[in-house]
Length: 437
Picture 1 (cartoon, rainbow, N blue to C red):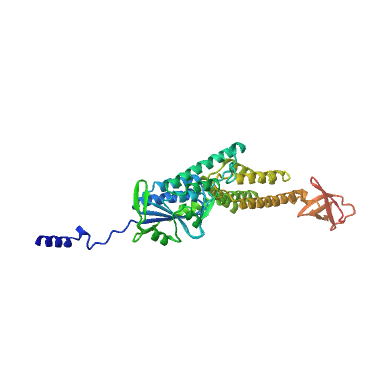
Picture 2 (tube, rainbow, N blue to C red):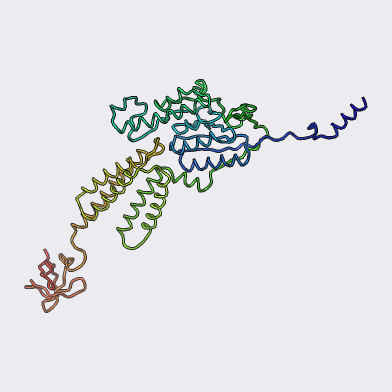
């Protein structure tokens, strides 16, 4: 009996043996990231940096807040690969209310270990958009649509197999996932939950953590238990350079920089000296070509666009009576549509912007051409020919005074010194004059 009491006292006196008197260990931190806007190389680099940071912090989970219209499939594949091989569960939360996960966003949601939607969000429409492919949802045989549509069908089949594999691996509705690619179908948050496309609905991050507390997640042969209560939340924002690249990496921004840079240089060459036009033009073009390096550029489209702009500018010099401007507008418009090889509309220049730029270019060069014609038809304003039609004062000795100089004149019969005469013609070093009408 005495030995038992001593043993009990020893255990109480040594808290490290039983854990009495010690604070429970805090759960590992949770890393949060956000994707807003198109998925591009800047977003990819941001997320890959975040997954590396999560590994260094030994994070318990990564929460990715998503609101995207889509983006580049190559960048999306790299992100999905990083999500699958992350050392901790990755939770994708399509939020806030009104957000969407379209196109590339569907792939990211299907690759998540836990997929969550906020109320009033939607998911879907993941059909690859290619210039050579058929319309979204087209099921026409490839043999009836030519080689361009064969390439489009191959891209669709590849994307469908890819997303189906992601859905199966995470226990989600693979049939719907494939339909999202092949038929561009979409679901609301409630429909996605009912069709086993996502795991739950949560309005915000706090509700998400409360509902996932204690949930077990299988990943890469391991079982993780999600612990959020008391866990530190570490936000991983985009760096300043990544934010700048994200803005510059938008196809509309790159397109505008390219066009505005060219117009600024045209203005600079049309005016003497080096001024604001040259500085602005060079700056815009440098930024534009920097943007083109991180976008899926179509070389044929870029050549057509630059050729179109060049033809319109050359017309102001060689005067083709508008023929080069018309051809330039056609090449410029076609090049604008072909400029980027995006897998979704978010990865290409928007149609309204192209149409507006075409209209502005037509107005700009049309007005410039009109001014050129007017200048060419106007009488000379410098040199000897500019004297024609000017009023001269008759001086003694067969001379006239006009524009600050004395000239020998013919046709002075009947004139007296001090009379006014009109210059009719310039004859070398002499003038022929007549009476004012």
